[in-house]
Length: 262
Ligand SMILES: Nc1ncnc2c1ncn2[C@@H]1O[C@H](COP(=O)(O)OP(=O)(O)OP(=O)(O)O)[C@@H](O)[C@H]1O
Ligand SMILES: [Mg+2]
Image 1 (cartoon, rainbow, N blue to C red):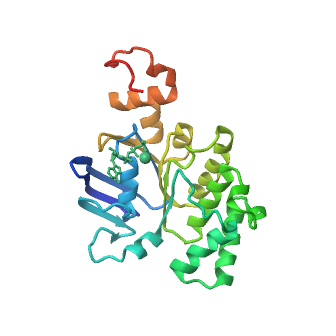
Image 2 (tube, helix red, strand yellow):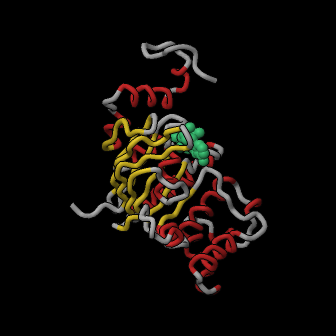
Image 3 (tube, rainbow, N blue to C red):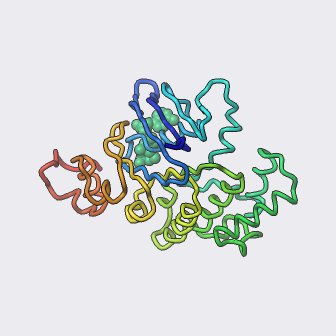
């Protein structure tokens, strides 16, 4: 079997007494899309943030492209350059244009010259369908357009893998589709992706595998059609029932222990 693009071994993360990740083992093959689902607080964001070292793992190892990124000798900046990350909040610089949002990190982090950085920026704006917004300011764009700019910004750094943390959760429903369409194209082009999402139709359609996390462990993982369509574990089933039909959360079911926490 070829070497996985992302490999996570025995990963633990604690914040003080809060043992958030409790032994995560996960491999993502090159070109695969893995969607991570699970309830709030289960550790999904922490997992992604440990992969690109925004959080320092308490225990365990992470490899990207065969290099151990958790090695204490590693150049963290070099690691982050290889891993693009897109957050729920787009975090664009508000005071500069869309193009400059893509150019500045390339110049600062990759030391690219202005002409090259601008060319790469244009190509990636084209890729996300926003070539015509090159000279706009972020505030002049819709949330969905801003998120596509954030994706183009990450792509401009030439990452080997892309991590997405609920990229569509902050968007109005009618803007979600355009962002997912860009992600679908990236996936079809062979980008290795880890995507935390509540978009089950995206997971079913695009993900090679779906991982269900709860309480800091992977409860169930497998092909999307199986985990989303026919989950084996009752906790996965319960989670999916609630997310696919939010009204089910209020209905007393066999597993309901009491009133839903508000
Ligand atoms: N920087 C931090 N400092 C302290 N505790 C943290 C930090 N980041 C996360 N946590 C804690 O870790 C736990 C898991 O949080 P995390 O954000 O990974 O969950 P999540 O699955 O992404 O949830 P959500 O679906 O709400 O985004 C929570 O109890 C949270 O309070
Ligand atoms: Mg999160």
